[in-house]
Length: 261
Image 1 (cartoon, rainbow, N blue to C red):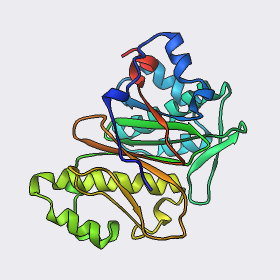
Image 2: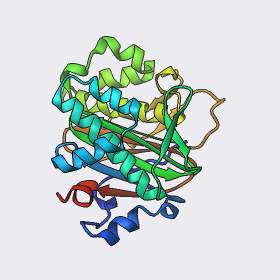
Image 3: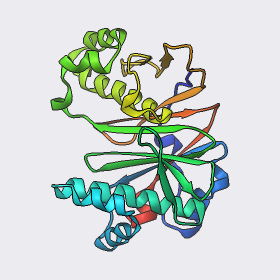
Image 4: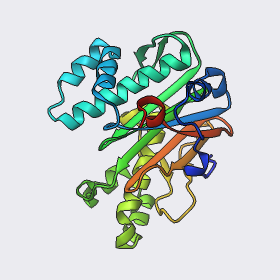
């Protein structure tokens, strides 16, 4: 059901800050058998970048942006959604229009395209993933000891996953919890079900020392899925799930290309 892999520095494209490099990685035809994973830091854009990104947002996104109470949350939302719209414009050569699926996952309404995408952000770090002809989900979480509540384990994880978490050495519990959760959330985002999904219907590897694996417990889900761990930043866990067969990953450091940093 899954192709175990860790995507990290060895998959990073050697593209810095030339227009030719940016054009190369944003050609839509390159996505037929590839997944482009962009990583961006929310503190990298300048004030002029922020004004540009604000001008790309939809009315709905602008309303959401006004609802954030802290500067950090406001900036993270603005940069993540602005960069998403900017990159989609580069891939598609036209400004995108989104529609929302039944459970709230955005997709392209215009232009008509087989390009799919997903984004995630946590505590200032942002990841975006793009491909074609595949369902895709990505998730990133910063290690936060306050978020690890054993009382919530039975809600988030299967009995087997709970046992594996509880058997981890104490020094691996934080890493194991966020490894498991990002893998589960990337999968439910890829399916488009989001938090309406039954978290008991599938399992992932919990022990960070073990090869990554996705196990579907319901025979009705016959889709082929590929689960990968992303090694992006220290003290963060991230995961990617895509449907279909093998693909070539490209990890792209977006800040030098987009923000000159």
